[in-house]
Amino acid sequence: MSNELLSVWHKGEKNIQKRAGTYQRMVDIGPKFIREFMPQQHRDFFSDLTMIYIGYMDHRMQTRASLLFGVPNFIQSPSGTELVINTQNSLGDFINDDIKVGDRVGLLGIEFDTKRRNRANAVVTDINQKNIRLTILQSYGNCPKYIQPKTLLHNHHYGEFSLVTDLHLNQADKDFISNADAFFIASHFDDGQQGNNRGADISHRGGSAGFVSINSKGQLLIDDYPGNGFFNTLGNLIENPLASLLFCDWYSGHALHISVSSKIIWHNDENHRSHLLTTKKDTGSDRIKRSLCFTPIEVERLINGLAYKQTLP
Image (cartoon, rainbow, N blue to C red; front, side, top):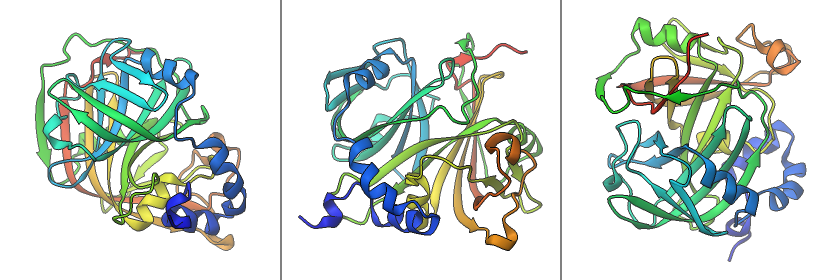
């Protein structure tokens, strides 16, 4: 098997790491932090969750970000390399028929109250109308950086679903996005090889409310805050710029799913100022090296899609 297939990182991740100056460190860190199994604390973490974010390719072969809900143990871990997820409750958008045995999915679990989060990328090994069974390909933890804590309660209107599809963001969408403190991005890389580092991925982006701005063209601009240096998302985007963004309105119980094309904007030493005013507060530095620009392709407004809500302050 080639070194590329054995590597923790695929070529897009390596290219971003080299440009960002983290590549040599990632050569050593990758095998230590990204495993082909889940340690017991990760198995327990996933089993205790009441929701999990999932990135996958839908029946239109478009990358999609969704959210699955349940009660503790709706995710089970029969072994250190397996997860079984009950997929019956979602934003109202998840269809089991969209996924086939052999598909690669990305998973992200977050406890907003404790700010714990863990990631997993996996392959589907079995599927029925109730569950999907997954074999873990990559498992790793993320730090609590940029997660805004919140306490969520049951949404009594969950399940009263409706869906509105549009080609553009309306003013209400823009107002919501401009005040959001988080979103989730699903990305995908597949060059036909079978390495563990291929497939779908989903990650969290957060900051102070207002960390996302919208320009006159309706494009979303986000500074790429300093993180773990893995560049899983940016590595996918440099190879495949099509992605999806999920914004959750925990106060209303609604969600916004946006299919986008993406562009990575690199700032040179003379032009390193961020697009936004929140950078120094969020990162402790105004030396932002990259920003992301997302151009909406399709907008979906998912009404009453969130099983949990946050009480108004």
